[in-house]
Amino acid sequence: MVQRYDNFPYLCTQSRTEMIDSSILQGKKAAYFTLGCKLNFAETSTVAQQLMRYGVTKAAKGEVADLVVVNTCSVTEVADHKCRQAIHRLVKQHPGAFVVVTGCYAQLKPQEIIETPGVDLVLGSEQKGNIIPAILNGMTGAYTVKTADIKTFAESCSRGDRTRYFLKVQDGCNYYCTYCTIPMARGRSRNGSIASMVEQAERVAREGGKEIVITGVNIGDFGRTTGETFFDLVKALDQVEGIERYRISSIEPNLLTDEIIEYCAASQRFMPHFHIPLQSGCDEVLRLMHRKYDTALFRHKIEKIRSVMPDAFIGVDVIVGTRGETVEYFERAYDFMQSVDVSQYHVFSYSERPGTKALDIPHVVTPQEKHERSQRVLALSAQKTHDFYTRFIGTTRPVLLEHASLRKPFMNGFTDNYIRVEVPNRPDLDNQIVQVTLGAMNKEGDALRGVIN
Image (cartoon, rainbow, N blue to C red; front, side, top):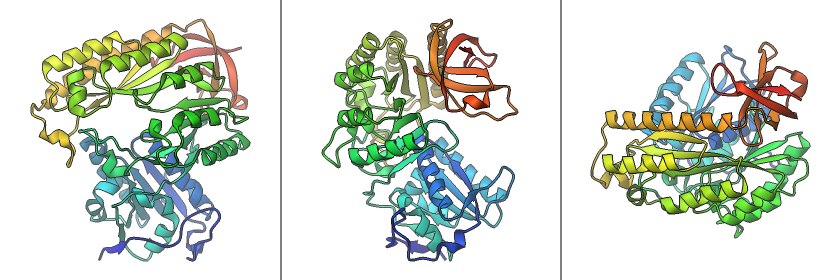
């Protein structure tokens, strides 16, 4: 029988001891699986860090875990399908484990998940920050969490298996684009304070971290909860001693002000790297999507970045095959995407999501048309990325090197402007910023070979 788990009274924080016997966790092995965005990966890493404080260690590859945590995505129907596959696979791989499913898919379809054989606990977005007492309470039976009224901002700043840290500064969204379920899955826009973000960045510096990626659902909307602004946050983080690199994760073009761009261009710590969602290069489709900008504003932002940071890497999200995207509209969008000086397109095929207003828009694009359009934009993206990389062959740039297995001949890192670089493996240079002369593309075509100076 599935019971309800609504409002467990004890928060999981470093400063408070839960009024539950946590010794049941001591010595347990946990397996973690994350689908979706960088924000999800950051949150999963935070959960792992919390559980470590209670004596839970990460299960080795091939080892059967006692506890499984699955952090899910629901941005498309394909994402939902991958979540279901992952849950079934992990239940099979870890027989007898206590299985926890959280994230956006869990928020939107909790009953569907709790009915999956082997799943013990489903936590919605509101309950992520209270996961320890939920697990402890849930180990006596199967529970599903009330998932409405997402109001809490759960802090997260974690590294996981990467060199870079991911600082969650904001969650949720108030935009309600017609194709998107994020407001339903993650709630309204909310954030922590600048003071708390600075404190977390200072902790990263004390741990020896050199690079922080600023993440969230709609980070440019930072400050809605606290009366502050994203620009205020950027300036405050820029003052933290010890952090050598910041990267701004996806930020809406209408919220990326010229003031922010100019400040980042002058900063030594904010890297020449932006990720900006376009979604469509056709104004008619942008209006159908209820986006808050047009192509003229988007072009201005790209040109502004190029004028003050000509070497910047600019990644762009686009969706193909949305309802209402006629052949004419797609061709217009494609022409626009060709014309703007960006470095890469992240391409998503439109997926119909229950409860979204896009379902009311006429003209449905066939799966074959979506695939063909996606392939065209992916080819355009590959060419733009190749052209961007080859511009810098023969130049020398700073690279933050990432840990690699001793068995591997190469280690990877990223330049300040986000070019992936491959150099001979030097374990002593893990998490170090070194000057590297960039050479030709590697055989996989996804990085430049480099020589450490």
